Image: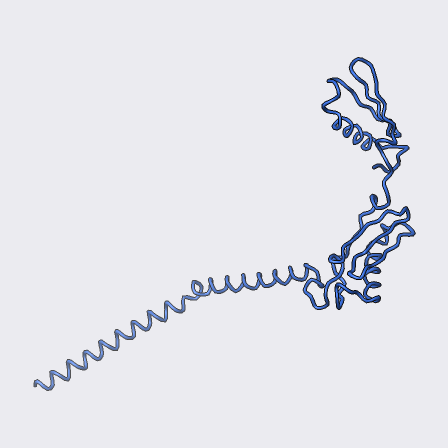
Length: 211
C-alpha cells in the first residue's frame, strides 16, 4: 500500500523490490536484479539479459483513509451506568470524546457512530473504517478504571513513598538517639548503688546487735 500509486517514493520502491525478491527467492537465478518504476511496475532482469515485467497495479495499491489514520483514544474512559447498554446521552459523550481527540487527524466528512456497548465505528470519506472496542472507551460509573491508570499509579507511588519514609525514620531513630541503651545503663547503675547502700545498712545493724 502506497500514498500515491502513480508516484512511489524511494522507500516504497524499495519495499516493493524487497517483497518481489522475497517471494521469488527460490526461483530467481543468482545475479537477478529487480527494479521498480515510479508507478510500481517491476522489471526483473535475469543474468542472461532476459526480462520479466509485472504491472504496477498488481503489486501496489493506494492506502485507504483508515490506513493513513491512527485514531487517538483518550486516556480517561467515559463513566456510564451500564457498559453493555449505553443511553443516547452516553453515546454522544463517547462520540464527542473521540472527535475531540482526533480533530486534527480525521479527514473532513468522517463519521463516528457508537454502539450499545460503547464500540466506536469510524467511517472515513472513502468508505474505509476503523473500529475501537467499547472496553477501551467506557467503564461503569464509580469504577477505578474511570480515572485512568495514572490516578491509580500515583496513588501507589504515594503510598510507597510514605512507607519508605516511615521505614527510614524507624531505622534511623535508635542509632541517632541511643535513648534505650542509655536508659538501660542508668537503671543498672542505680540498682547497684541501692544494693550497696542496703548492704552497708545491714552490716551496721548486725554489728550493733552483736555489741
